[in-house]
Image 1 (cartoon, rainbow, N blue to C red):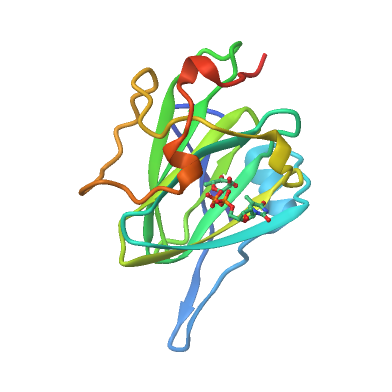
Image 2: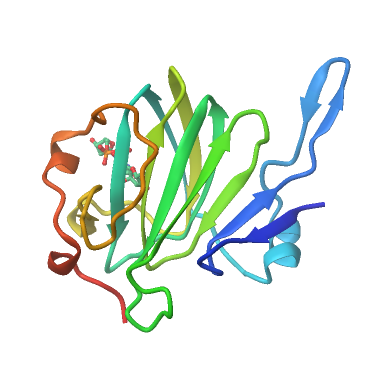
Length: 182
Ligand SMILES: Cc1cn([C@H]2C[C@H](O)[C@@H](COP(=O)(O)OP(=O)(O)O[C@H]3O[C@H](C)C(=O)[C@H](O)[C@H]3O)O2)c(=O)[nH]c1=O
């Protein structure tokens, strides 16, 4: 049974899978197409699985593809992250707004972020491993980086100290300088 919690931006969904725990450990279905469709009403086709590992203080994002936008289903298998989605859909009532949730390897909660959003996360734990499914293929020529601390979006990152950023993310662009969606 997959429970769904809509968040401040209703199309971004926090999914709570049923975890079967016993004296050996745990088991759960990390993805089930039928259950996902039944719980969300969404018919999605994932074509790529991603896996990243990061040390404490790393902030990856805020990334998105524009011509080939990706819906993403994100989960944490080690540690804890603060995961953020920014609504770049100009027709949306929540255009320019952000939503953030804690994801960790204890609750196994997952975040569904549809196409049209920028995505990023900050690592709270000593290390974190993040798995996410994407609904379209990676296209490096179509990647855009919204500046993680853009003052217009003003994500309230729960940072402790300066984040560790890639060179690309240090060069992120302001909200007004990245392509948005209709
Ligand atoms: C995303 C991606 C990257 N790569 C290669 C390209 C680079 O040589 C290397 C690291 O890429 P990057 O620094 O862009 O990785 P992240 O900073 O974790 O990027 C991701 O972080 C945020 C949180 C996201 O939501 C995106 O999915 C994605 O942009 O992996 C691939 O080969 N395939 C891919 O799908």
